[in-house]
Length: 474
Image (cartoon, rainbow, N blue to C red):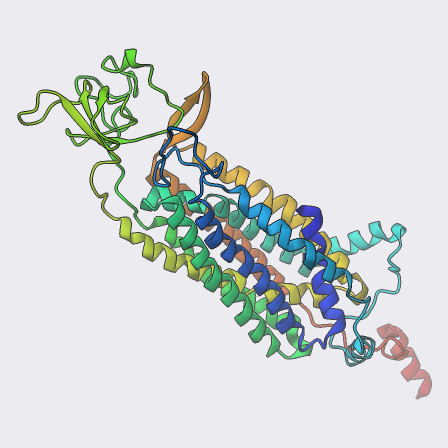
């Protein structure tokens, strides 16, 4: 996927900029990026419906799992199969595009003549030996440096959160995997597509000769709203259930001494591979019916003769029902979380076209594609790749109970959600703060293309040479 998509996001914007008028470039780029953002949104929505299908399409004989069951695994692979089939004919259409569109050469020459775009660097001819000097030139460009730093730090946080956003909605707000997928898809469409389109329209209204400076300032303003949106992570979610052996001790035992393995279930050989919570009549949640010491199953949702559950009322033996105990308070706050998330996405993606405009207008005309590719490599290597790893470590650091499979540690089954969301919030504020600092420095470094003409001999003289010429003429 990396080798296939990288040329699209590096050569694609440069190809568009070369073949349309500079005034129209922001709109074309907005359409281009809006479609690329619409895809993931539709993917989440359609992918959520595919999760209703069992991973092997048909369940094994004797199995009667439902999508609400924690042990359910949906057919995630069907999305890749369908997406790959659609991409094949589209790739064939891309091959048919010419080197340049009709009339593009005259538009390009006129834009260079009027100073709407930077001039070419005649020293760089696009040969293999030019890679090192071209790279050094890009590194020394302060506008490109701060632009790359800003989008890389934003990508580091965005890629990390995107990998675990569905999990956060499930853990913090009690949403099912299917509902979480649909919610993310609904959020992505207005937040990303709306931001990109509006950003393209606004950038198009910028004065061409000042577009670099105006685009840089525009990004600073939008970044301030992004920082304000980070308050979404501090919105309280559902109340944390009292899980016996983790947050609350079993009846007759002290917390932390034996965890979920206590004398009342020690001889049951209970599995820790995957949580299957039940609510005992003592109003405590248990990791599974086995960990509650239940020996009989009345039906699919009710378990009886539970040795770890203290009987209530007139009953002689403890019982439990499937799921956590009662409705956890605060679950509806996910609506406020989603609204702030839309604000964050809108603020981030409204600068997408402005960021590309900064790169396209601060680099010599014949180095734009290489600059976009260079920036894309840095963004992916230092942003998208380590982001999920970093946030995975944050999740693991707040795990209270690890699963076990075949004697080895498995996935985390229970998190300390307050600590987790606090760490996510402070991490988000830190990264967006660095991005705002970089964006501000980029705005201060942004300079419009020089208005001097290369054939203006007099204006290219040093100041002392001009003075000597004036004295000689007098």
